[in-house]
Length: 562
Image (tube, rainbow, N blue to C red):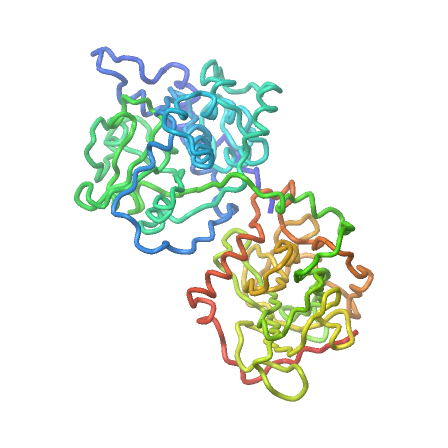
């Protein structure tokens, strides 16, 4: 779903006006009249997270799978970061947090950089370049602040140049555009995706323990603004007569034994004069209590070639050699449409085709499945299986297929005791190419994807794991909007008859699934199939999936029609 850019920057809070008027007057980190370093006013204007413009509901949540066992009592990721920076009096904190700190750190982690390596401007990323490159709708004029999403979107689509190429000086009013040479270098330094995470004690500690630094937004007050100590910030006050606002920083450590309750270690961008050399400890309870930290983000580098969205093309397949000695399930055809025989618009049907493109027969004894699922486009932790088609020899009954007594499908469960030879469709054993199956959409409201998944629990070792998915989206490749379970718009609407999906033809060897991902050049931050596969496998492994199994006394039979 495209992020809306309708937010007006002409009605920002008084702080933004103050930043526009005063931002060029203060120069943070100049000595004050007492010669003791920056004063309170300097730091009060070195902020810049535009919290009111952040549209968090349109940012994908990370697929949180819980902690990998007990986390250590303390973790310090500071050695993985470049030296503390200084944003001066500009409202560039989000690009310092996202570009200079987070991007430099995750590149360093991926490339095994040492602390010494990270002191080189060639291994640091430029907040100036990232701020200048951002869409004007995601930032205020005169360097007066920006959103996290705007910074991450620019980092994902364009990338960011290094501090060696674009030092943090001569920002002016930030109305200039990056030079072409900066953009050329930036193309080599993009992120794969960014994800929103909960401001929750165990969640935050789990990510840090996994060496995943966190960018976060906070509301800062008097104590924080003038902090110069290695002690723990346990509370804040708001008595300073100037304007307070929101600020972007990085979470880079924690210690259960620091202070009265344990504390998080944060990296700021106010030089090494502030805090304790530019760092500060914030009490666990204060950090997650609702008055300090409000939103967090993580990011990943290095998208694999299998996730290149341009590879989906127009559905044409790539000819190639036979996949020898392997199975390879391909989600080849799918239509999801309303059922006019029912007045309830939540009642729908699918027509689908799945092929085994390898030369190895997939046996029913391998106990694999085809699932049809839905998930929230911005929080895939909210998902469920609608239809569950189970290939097994564990079931008995008349014929070689029938309804399951129990199964994870909320709308239907079926078993088939058939093998699938190489080069054939799963429906071939029934003399058909495609299956048709009705279902009822739950009463969800919001943006969702529908997806057919061949080998939903990843039971079959395959030649290509990325062609198992077929997504249903709107005409532009974005999520479908449901209101109380009813699709809004024209997707899947028809007047009469069953949609004909046979015109897709039979796939060639090494075919790619026509709608294998929702990733596209317009939707770069969508969930990848690998993320969904990991989520489903985790829920099966932990028993969460089994807990979703519902008993059915009566199932609507799946009809198998040519």
